Structures are given as structure tokens and as C-alpha cells.
Image 1: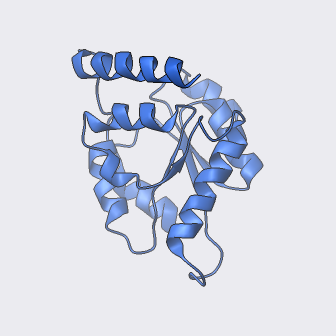
Image 2 (image 1 turned 135 degrees about the horizontal axis):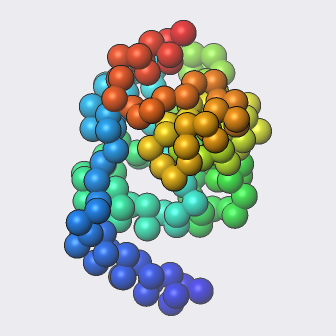
Amino acid sequence: MERICDRYLGYLEEEVRQSPAYRVLPGVGRLLPLLAARADCLVGLGTGNVEAGARIKLARADLNRFFPFGGFGSDAENRVEVLRQAVARGEARRGPGGDGPARVVVIGDTHLDVQSGRALGARTVAVATGGESAASLREAAPDLLLPDLGDAQGFLEMLDG
């Protein structure tokens, strides 16, 4: 399995580097620095990718610096368990005491992301920038449905609300 993964990662690195379709989704480049600047916010990643694969994909746009921890497909097969790992790593970074229990917000672009966030007890934000339509995401009943992350101020207001 390790050899297969190593080979996959070699191909992935080349594909990501050369892909003309690679892009950062609308609003992400503006929102991440705003979140990183907040003392009350830790930003982690929850993905089905193995960690090295996720890091390769984020590296092209220099986004790894915004995701110091996460939960990955290499941690668990189940999406809820992947998110649980991300939350545990966030809690470890936050340290003991904190300022009360952590509030977790899961942002995703599929109904499965919304369902997994809900199973975790998190607030959920669905963003219609992936393969699922806004109508499909609406059926999953996220706490907030956005066309993209272009309204950074609105997103921050939602976090504070």
C-alpha cells in the first residue's frame, strides 16, 4: 500500500503542477487570511485525501500555511471520523482551558460534508462551488448555504452570530 501511495503522490504532484484547470475557488484567498488573523479561530482541513496528497494540492497556491492541522483520509475511511480527527488536533493546538468548549464549523461542497458535520454536532456551511448544485445542497439542510466564499464579511458575521 505504501508503494502504491508513493507512486500516486508522484503522479499527483506532476498533475497538480501542470494542470491548467487548477484554481483557487472564489473568496478563499481573501477569507483565509482574515480567519488566520483571528485569535479566536483555528482553521483546519478535513478531507478524504491522504495528508501528503492534500498538501500537494494546497501547495501550488501556497495555502498550506492556513491549515496547520487536519483530519485526512489516511486517518480514517469514515468522513465523520476524519472530521473528528481534525477537531482533536485542533483541540490539541488550542491547549487546555481555552475559552469554553470549541465551536466547530464544517465548510463543504457536498451533501455528505453537511451530513458529516451535523453528525459531529458542528455548524455547517455548504458552498456551491463543487459538483453539487445549490438545490442539492439545500436539501441537506446546512446552517448556511453560499454560492461561494466571496462574501468574507458575511461569513465572519455568521461566525460571530
